[in-house]
Structures are given as structure tokens and as C-alpha cells.
Figure: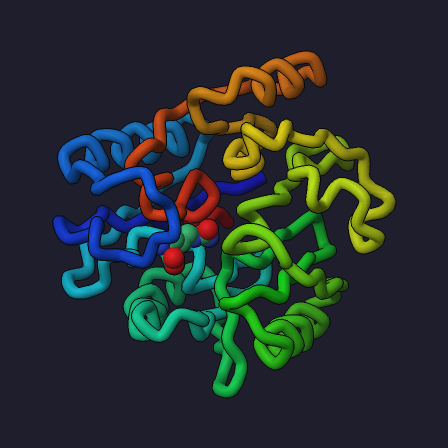
Length: 252
Ligand code: CIR
């Protein structure tokens, strides 16, 4: 169970962040409303939320999950793989130091928290355009110190591992078709999202509840049939910037 979350308010220039989507320019007022609803959903799931102030000059900084990995034992400050995002990470360290000892990913390692999926004491670490092997191995060593295990998983599709794979409880992963048959994920039940709904794989488990993006009826139906307790949130503006539900908070 999680008790805390850290989020960061989006900054007015958040539309200048990195994106590969062609969904048009995002709207700041709508983003603020959607972000506030997201914070309320975390609170409703029982989390005390520390909301950091917007970080001027870092338009992607509200995607806080990428710049730290929080476990029950430690908070690891990452070294983000996108040069434009390097610098965000140090601003998060003081917020986490009050709850966990701090460790750090060092050069030449790069690692984005969006590539790290915690399933109990096992961690999947995606090797992506943002996370290199040195970064994954550094994180792996830190996790091992606290009795955890880890597996590296090549991420050929999507920005981050958790853009495509998330844990939804009861030994089950919600996955895109690309990851449905991956050997590294053997041993888990799978719910496979339809190709036209691949964005819905970015669904967030919080204390037994699933927060999923609004507008993905097939995935909602599959999760409901499986017995999930579902909350839907409209995250259209984060989606325009390649982000989503898992990326906008750190839970621990
Ligand atoms: C980026 O490209 O870094 C941001 N525009 C989106 C980051 C989304 N984070 C995530 O999937 N964990």
C-alpha cells in the first residue's frame, strides 16, 4: 500500500516539452484542471500528496516520475535520458529526502523512472531511448542492496516501458500487444489492450484502485470484467505531450 505521492504543478510553457504526438498544442487551463483532478484522485485513494510548485524552464517537469524511483526503502534520483530534462532531478531530492534515504544514478548511466515498474520486490527496468544499460545496472545494484530482484527489458515500442506495461494487481500485467508474449514477462497473467487503445496501457494502480485514462471503452470493459475498481480521468492534455497517468506522480 502507498501512503504518499509527490506531484508537480505544470508550468505555463509545458506545451514546449518534448513530444512525438501530433495531437496539436495543449491548453494550459485545461491541463491545470486535469492535473488538479488527478491529485484529487490520488488523495481519494488514500495518499497524502505533496504538490511541488511549477518549475520554470523545465516544461516536462510535472512528469515527476521520470526523475526519481521511490521504493519502500530508498529514493533513487535518476539521470534523465533526455538532455533537456537533466536538472529536474535535483529539485526533487529535498522533497524525497524527508521520507527515504537518497541514492543517485551517475554518468554515464541514464535512466527515466517511466522505465521502472515495481511489482512487489521485483523490478522491471526498460532499456529504452532514455534508459541505458549502465543506468539500469546502477539502479539494479541499489535495488539488490535492499533485497530486491530485477530484470532488464528492451523497450522497442513506445517512449517508456510503462507506456506499454503496468501492474494492475493479482499477479496481472496490463500490456500492449507488443509485450504480450515477451519472455521476460512470463509468470504473470496478461490483459492485452487493443492496438487502437494502446495509450490505455498507461493505467495507474493505487492501493487496489485503477486510475485509467478516459475514452478507452474496450480496455475499460476488459478491466471491469476482470473485477477492477476503476476511476477514469481525462488526461487529454498530458497525452499531447507523450505523458499520462503513471508519469505525473511518484507513489510510495
Ligand atoms: C518526455 O518526453 O520526457 C515528456 N514529454 C513525457 C514524459 C512522460 N513520462 C513517462 O511516460 N513516464
